[in-house]
Amino acid sequence: MTTIASERPAGRPAGRITLRTDRERAPRSERRAGLLLSSPFLIVYLLFMIGPLAVGVVVSFFNTTTVKSGLGGWVGLSNYRTVVQDSLFWSAMWHSVLFTLLTTPPLVVLALAFAVLASRVRRGTVFYRLAFFAPYVVPSSVVVLVFLWMYTPQVGLVPKLFSAVGLTSPDFIGSTSGGWTAVVLMTLWWTFGFNFVLYTAGIQDVPTEVYEAAAIDGASPWQQIRFLTVPLLSRTTSLVLILQILASLKVFDQIYLLLGGGPNQSTRPVIEYIYDTGFTSYRGGYGAAATMVYFVIIVAISAAWYALRHYRTAAAERADQRPAPRAERRTS
Amino acid sequence: MTTLAPVRRRRTPTPAAVADRSNGAKLFNRLCAVCVTLFALIWLVPLVWALITSLRSDGSITAKPTSPFAGGWSFHAYSYAWDNYPLGYWYLNSLVIATLAVLFTVTLCSMAGFALALLRFPGRNAVMALVVAGLMLPTEGLVLPQFIEYRSLHLLGTYWALVLPSVAAPVSVFVFHSFFRGIPTPLIEAARLDGASWWRVYRSVCLPISRPAVATVAILTFISSWNAFLWPLLVLSQTKSQTVPVGLASLVNPSNIQYAEVMASSVLGFLPLIAVFLVFQRQIVQGVATTGLK
Image 1 (cartoon, rainbow over the protein chains, first blue to last red):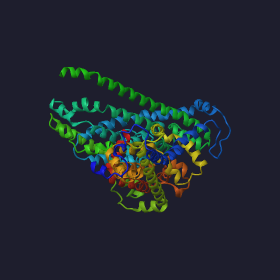
Image 2 (tube, one colour; image 1 turned 30 degrees about the vertical axis):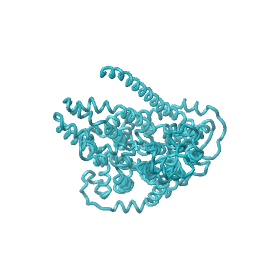
Image 3 (cartoon, rainbow over the protein chains, first blue to last red; image 1 turned 90 degrees about the horizontal axis):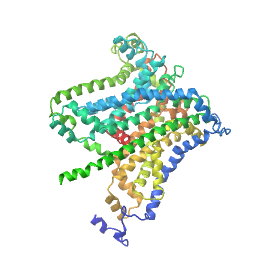
Image 4 (cartoon, rainbow over the protein chains, first blue to last red; image 1 turned 90 degrees about the vertical axis):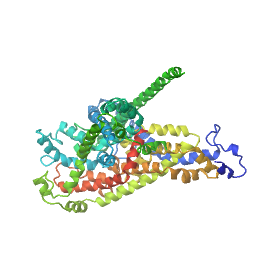
């Protein structure tokens, strides 16, 4: 550093050029650079991320239609009243929740199981990555086209498989339970890789000394997984769980493309309900009110998770601090 | 720097290597390998099955659906799909939109990430809080007000309508923010002492070192922009100006019996992404791990 310092422009005393330790007001050039560099993003962000949110709040109080521009008449809270009383909205909300309940447990458990198993295999990392994660980068409409072909009665692979094990295959497109089976199987295949990658990254963060110590103590591989790997991954698990719940509550593509929300709207998720009211019935204001109700539910879930995690970390820190003096006393 | 630590850690011995020394571990690890490999092979079935079907003729598929070698193989379905659907236009649209999205996202978000990580300026904390809050917004749910806003700004049907939402996503700012924070302060101080302006520090010092962050943001933006479905479906309405996912969605029809042609289109829909994945698989996996775990 000294060599560079000697080349500093003349006239500026070295003692005043301290960048990070300076607690006082930042130099004018730094303030100006900060504002200039962050403003392009900030403008786009405020206009196109915060903007729609504000538009949604405003429009939800009006009788706006999506066919022509303009707000329409003021209706106050009546859109919200209709949404809350609409059984179709709540059944769509329930379908999103049901989808979440059906997909979250297998997606988390399978990802954990196979990430742990794969971590014990030395070769083939790239192959596992390709097999498990490549589906995640395939567009949803392609996934639906491929699975629709596999679900085709008589000629498809899945009905053949069902009859091979002696089961009658359900009507994957025409019936409600068959439709849910079809969508859940497809989603498992499509999104499993994401959680697999998160778990693999989590496993890599576990120090190998832990396993060495366990192996010296004579722990069998199964005991190592049961008592070391899985408990040490609990932070990753809570993260994977919340990300999966939030992602599943946003389901639209798969159900819309594969089933169109049918049969008889019995699988229509809440995003498709909003889409239908806004773009098929053109009730913009009403759709915006439904958006806001859905939105409050999602934000409440993520806020609850953040609060819980904060509380847990604080509790863990307190627990960490307590045994420390005792350990000191023992050594001294 | 801190964000990409898992990369370098990959070289350390795996639990498998360590556990080999313990009781019966070798057998257990073999068993694991067999299990995971079987599962991985099952996972590849849909893609392979689509590929095989696309190379057969419709007649032999209906006659002998599960024997892939019956009836011979041909590329007929591909030429049919290419001639009958405007696949070329869809590709071009997707490519232009994804490229623009990558360029704008990397430029704007890296600038903002740099300012938030290294510069003190009035309102910095407010901007940071706004960006953190934005991470919780489920954009998928906001399509309706978004549509109303873009219509009143006369942006519907333009490329801008598809580029701007990906720029406005705060995740990319976060990736850059955490990367720039890992840059050692002496390096920046030295550049400043040499008389470099803040713009030069960003452009010629920080951006070149943060190539991993640029790669992460660029690849993830490309993939998510290419694969987006609901928003492009609403914004682009004519057939020729559609993107690949929206265009292919028009082929979804349970009663479609042109199996080979539909599978050929699907293969054309997933091949570019599988190619991108194979080339950048390490960066993609790291990118997902960093953005997911943040």
